[in-house]
Length: 137
Image (tube, rainbow, N blue to C red; front, side, top):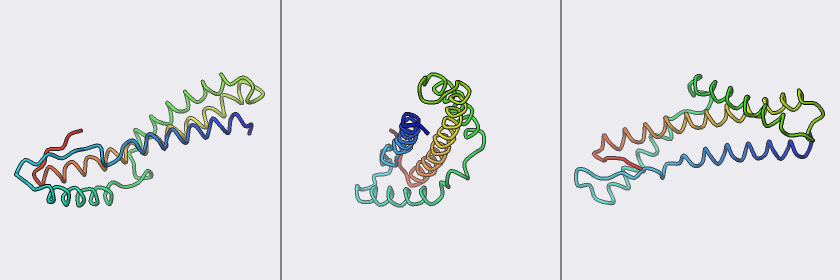
């Protein structure tokens, strides 16, 4: 692989990880609706977060539809980027194939991470609401 292609793939992986990390547990702020103390709120947050982390699953357990959409979009955009990289590989077909492969992998990873985090967030919100909090960003 050429250095430019390696850098491009490194950027795609870093971007995917950044997007996954942007979906963290600290985005949602619970507001007590039943007069809970701050200490109780922190305890409930901790417990609900542990429940969500334990039950959200992993990327292989994510739904197939979002992952397939991620692969399709990633492959299409990767192929377009691969064709536009003039000096990285010899022919347009090779550039398109390399870009499509990298894009499909990145799209799958991003959609799997997004789906797992979405599921974890839904579990966390449901847990906090069951304990008497409203949860908002």
